[in-house]
Length: 231
Image (tube, rainbow, N blue to C red; front, side, top):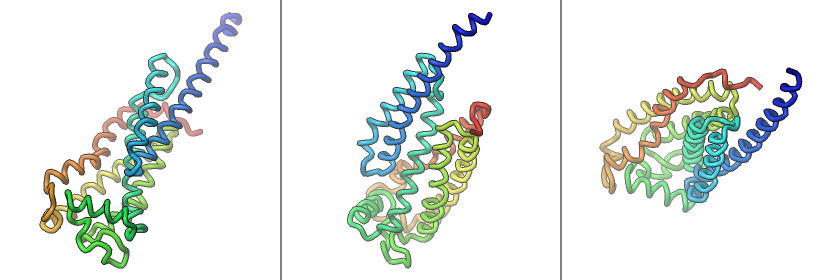
C-alpha cells in the first residue's frame, strides 16, 4: 500500500505543477489580450493574445490537466473586457475630452447611432458628453461599477471566493445600471435619435454588449462555489 502511494503521489504532483504552469501562461496572454481589447483602439492587437490564451487553457483541459474550466475562463474574460471598455470610455470622456482622438471617436459614435454624444459637446462644467443624465452615468459606471467589475473578474479568474461573490454583486449592479441608463436614454430619445445614420436599430446593435450581466448571472448561479478558495 505504501509503495503504491509513493508511486502515485509524485505523478499527481507533477501533473498539478504542469497544470499550474500552463494556467499561469494562459492567464498572462488572456490578461494582455483583454487589456488591449479594452482600449478599443488596440483591440485587434489583443485578439491574438486572447485566442492563444483560450487555446492553451482549452488544450490543457482536453489533456485532463487540473486547470480552470474553459467556460469559466471565457465568462471571466468577457466581464474583464466589459469592465475595461466601459471604465476607459467613461474616464477618457471626463479627463481627455479636448483631445483630438476622443473628440473624433465620441462624435463619431454620436454621428452613427446616438446624437447624445455630440449634442453640445464640451459645454458642461465637466467636459465631454453633455446629454441629460449622460455625465452622471459616466461617473457612476466608469469610476465605480466597471472598475469593480474588473477587480471581480480578476479575482474570479484566480478562483478566489471574493471574486466569485463580487462577480454576482457587480452583475446585479450592471442590471440596475442598464435599466437606469436605458430609461434615461428613452426619455430623451427625441433628442438622441435624430440626425444620425443608424437610429433605433443602430443603438440596439451597439447596446447588445451591455446585456452581459443577463448572460453571465444564470451561469454564475450554476457554479459550485466550493471550487473557489479563500487563500
